[in-house]
Image 1: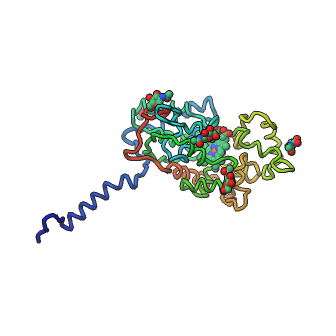
Image 2: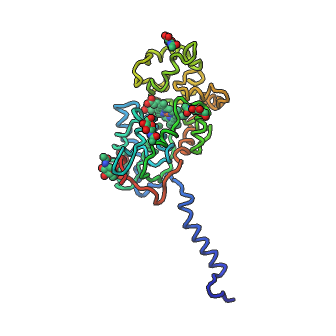
Image 3: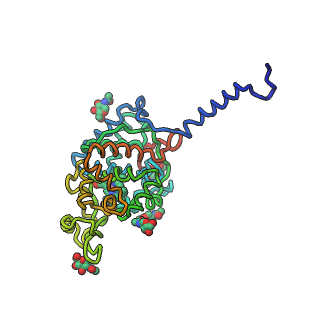
Length: 333
Ligand code: HEM
Ligand SMILES: *[C@@H]1O[C@H](CO)[C@@H](O)[C@H](O)[C@H]1NC(C)=O
Ligand SMILES: *[C@@H]1O[C@H](CO)[C@@H](O)[C@H](O)[C@H]1NC(C)=O
Ligand SMILES: *[C@@H]1O[C@H](CO)[C@@H](O)[C@H](O)[C@H]1NC(C)=O
Ligand SMILES: *[C@@H]1O[C@H](CO)[C@@H](O)[C@H](O)[C@H]1NC(C)=O
Ligand SMILES: *[C@@H]1O[C@H](CO)[C@@H](O)[C@H](O)[C@H]1NC(C)=O
């Protein structure tokens, strides 16, 4: 049976539709994969880990600082390395580093540059800065006693920063539970992710200015009632009224530099340092059951944490031919 001129046979139509779908797939359904650099940079994870191990020798806090960079990167136009770009009038970059949640607070940029140099030496032009942040987050947690997980890779680097977005989207320590829930939900993360990922406050430091309001005149009769009074007294030594707002306290007063589940026992004991921490247990409607579960089982916490880190790392990645592989994490190519 013949086919009229100018039309396709049914089989040919199916063929063209199938090709069309195949061409669409990589752009509409781009996925990160843990084997992305298996042939182009097989050793990238261990290179990242080695540089962080060296940095930890002189700075016990650096792992905490590095995972926070990945978090602050992902919450602003996706995990695209945008937080690493510095102010640049030629390329019109108004840096996220100067946004409220990051200025005089985000740190670890020098170590990211050292990692990038080591990775470029092994595999030039291949690994994105956004993926380096995701790998550094995992290495920092596992080197501190926390879980390991296989990190989905294949993100590309953005060519813009969004300072206003960083001001608006990154959670504040003064946020209540509703604010926190809505900022996580805005990037596709749920309450389980909020509680599990807040467990990253099991290590690292916070400056007095982020919690001093809880220590004095929080109510007419004194400190925040959801703050243990003995802990408040200790914190008042570190953070005197009208003292240095940049002085540091450990986010986890029990095991400062270890990645463990003590953060959740702290919340049960009214020893959450930030208001946003204690809200997870003490606020009306708080997901206290999750806090109790992570406090009683470190295994449950580690498993949820790893899973939620993968979810956070999947926020709006650039893939395929979008973005670029930056040569220098601080500036666009
Ligand atoms: C839930 C909302 C969150 C709020 C309101 C919040 C807020 C803060 C604040 C105010 C600090 C102290 C910064 C300073 O004083 O310079 C801090 C530190 C830190 N945050 Fe968060 N954070 C949140 C979630 C997260 C998440 C999801 C992670 C990672 C998965 C994370 C990891 C860290 C780490 C490790 C530190 C210590 C950093 C260092 O010592 O350099 N935070 N956070
Ligand atoms: C992988 O990297 C580590 C750490 O930098 C290094 O010790 C090791 O020799 C590397 N292995 C290969 C096969 O390049
Ligand atoms: C973001 O916040 C910082 C510090 O509060 C402020 O200096 C800056 O102008 C803000 N930027 C934008 C674009 O809103
Ligand atoms: C939290 O949300 C409330 C109401 O939605 C808002 O008035 C308040 O300013 C927010 N707090 C912060 C710290 O963003
Ligand atoms: C705030 O609290 C401090 C110490 O708790 C007290 O000395 C001071 O008078 C209080 N200030 C106000 C304005 O209530
Ligand atoms: C600004 O960005 C351009 C392009 O990435 C780069 O060549 C230049 O060195 C940057 N300037 C500064 C001051 O970083």
